[in-house]
Amino acid sequence: MSAVTINGISKTFDGKVAVKEVNLDLRDGEVLGIVGPSGSGKTTLLRLVSLLIHPDSGIITIQGVNAEGSQEHRRRLRTQTAMVFQYSALFDTNIFNNVALGLKIRGFGKREIETRVRDMLGLVKLSELEKRRANTLSGGEAQRVALARALVVQPKVLLLDEATANLDPKNVEIIEGLVRRANVESRTSVIIATHNLNQARRLATRIAFLLDGELVEVGDTAEIYANPKDERTAAFIAGRMVW
Ligand SMILES: Nc1ncnc2c1ncn2[C@@H]1O[C@H](COP(=O)(O)OP(=O)(O)O)[C@@H](O)[C@H]1O
Ligand SMILES: [Mg+2]
Image 1 (spheres, rainbow, N blue to C red):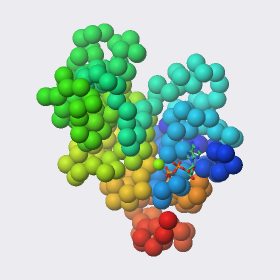
Image 2 (spheres, rainbow, N blue to C red):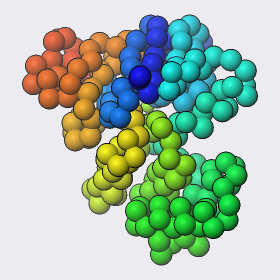
Image 3 (spheres, rainbow, N blue to C red):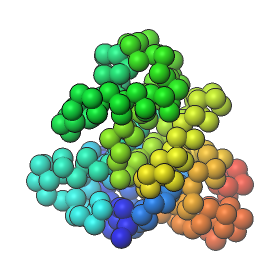
């Protein structure tokens, strides 16, 4: 079974087509890179998969379940996924509470919450800062909190939207390491949307190349870099695409 299926999905904003008839699967346990220049529809596609917005047409399934339905149905299905944005808004409280919130909502007990949050803060190397208010953090620390908040609920599907753009190499390394770990140890299926080809290459097993809302090409990472079939993919990979 696929973790996510995207079947004939289109989305238009004010007459502008952001995503056009995209068909794409996230296979169970894989890391899929969605790559393309700015404006190609990556964020829109992730917002559709995270059920934040509705498609104009087409069907999305999460863990085999059709996402269309009542608000309650979508809300329940959304708990299978977690998303980290380029600029993730944290709550105006301390780091511990930011990471704990999703567990509280899901009804976990106090002891279990403390154990899970402290373990997760250790993994993102923020144990010393658990009492710090979120609005005093650096950009890199804030993104590590956002990732901790996403992973602590052990989502089946993790969605990363340019999650390390503008971060320094040390923060990128911590975040990428943790994404890899979640994928390997918890079998979390991951989609990373990025315009950064190097990051996609480091993390993804398959790459989908998006341009002007359309899926141009999808293939195994090594194959698509070495031997792109579409001229536009080749141009993007070679740095010849102007946008
Ligand atoms: N909420 C919105 N309202 C109007 N236009 C939007 C909205 N979101 C995205 N778009 C447009 O859809 C296209 C795809 O955007 P986006 O999904 O953000 O691409 P990417 O993440 O690849 O940069 C762009 O032309 C963008 O301007
Ligand atoms: Mg984007």
